[in-house]
Every structure is written in structure tokens, then in C-alpha cells.
Image (cartoon, rainbow, N blue to C red; front, side):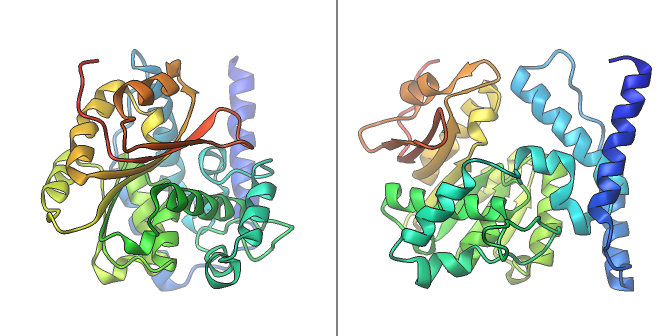
Length: 314
């Protein structure tokens, strides 16, 4: 990309950002203080390296750098319309949304569970989904994944005592689980920039106030949290399209922790960044206690639930 093209690209991205913020009311003094604090937190993050890395790590470091850039300057009250969020976790005009909404509406628990679960709270200014304006595509898809993984794991989310989520997006799954009745201890482990956004979103959504939800990007915090799980607690590791996008070195670092947690609910793509994830999960995770389901309307995507297989040599 030449200098002129690069300039046009950056100008276009900032114009799209301003369009996303158009119509927002001026922030109240309290909102202004929160926005300024978040900008300062993002500014303290270093720029992540992208050269010479594993393709998966370089990809997510690039996303983290873009989020850092936006987090330092943009209004987080419209973060669900930021380009990096739309591209990775708040997709618009996705062909998956319509069949997933239809499946939720056809479910016997639509009236008692799913209808309220897909009602947006408005934090981050999510884009309305025209066929169901009280919701957004990201929220509908998140709730659908919960429904499918509940069925595959044979346990509702409100029946777990502890959830360890690996790669929490902007915090949407955590909020959904609490909306569906989860009241245990919850930890999200993610990259530093996304951890900042999760803390903002979950605070604004009223989920952080109880003290049972933590977000971290520090492996030592993750180790300590997992080591603190009691033998009588029902614990689960949850990773939707995150573990399969992670470098192999980190996957192997995480796997013994999942063995200590005991159970997992995972969604993954068959291939990402040159890695054959079908072979990876088959060889290293799937055991006699595992259940796998191909997602028919999402080409080459899968759900997996069960207990992690014993550690084997790569």
C-alpha cells in the first residue's frame, strides 16, 4: 500500500468511527471521568510486536494494537461499532444470524429463557438487528452458542459454580451467562487491550459489582484462580473461537490448567492461521468423554464439550 493509499485508508477508518459516534449525547461528568480513565489505561499499553511472530499471534497482536489506538482516542460508548470489534466479534449482516435466531425462537425455552437473554442492554451502542430490533447480531449468536453448548455438555450455565473463559471478546458471553442465572465465580483471561474493554463493558452492564467476576491478562492470575477451585465445585473452561486462534505454545500452557478445571465447552474453526484445528483437537483434546458437533450452517466450524484428554507429546 502506497503512502497516499495508506492515508486514504486511515482517513476512511476515522470517518467511519465518527459516523458510529454521531448522535451520542454529550457525556455526563461521571461518563467523562470514566472515558478519560479508560483512554489513560489504553495509553499505558505498549504497542505489541507483529513482525517475526507465529501468524496467529501476529494477527491478534495487530487487532490489539488497533484496539489500543481506538481505546486511547475514541468514545467507548460506541465501541461495538469500532472496526476491530465489528470485524472480530460483532459481525453485521452475517448469514449465520437468521438461522440462529430461528432456532432460538423454535426452542421450547424461547419464552422462559432465550427471548429475554437476547434483549440488548445497549452498552457500546450495538447495531440493531432489523428482523429483531431489540437485539443485535453479536448477542443473538452468543446466546445461540450457549444453547448449543449447554445441550452438548448436558449442563445449563447456571449449574456451574466456576467458569474460566479464555478469550472473552468484549465481555458479552459473561454478561449473557449472568443474565441466564449464573451466580458463581467467573474469570476471563485475554489480551491486555481486550481486558480493559471487558472491564469497561461489564462495569457498565452491571456485572462487575458483585465481586465474583474478574478479568486478567496475567497467566499468574489465571494459575492462582484455577488452583483455588475446590474439588466439590463444578468448574468449566469456556472458549468460543479463541483457543483455536491461539499460538501452539500458549495452547500447551493452557491445557494442563483445563485438566485441573475438569470440563470444557469449546467452539472452533477447522482451520485458522495455517493450523489444522480439526487434527489438533482430535489428537490432543478429544477423549472418550468428549462430544463434538459440526455446525451445519457455519462451514468448517465445530462445537466440542467434555473433559480434556491426557497430555500427550506434540
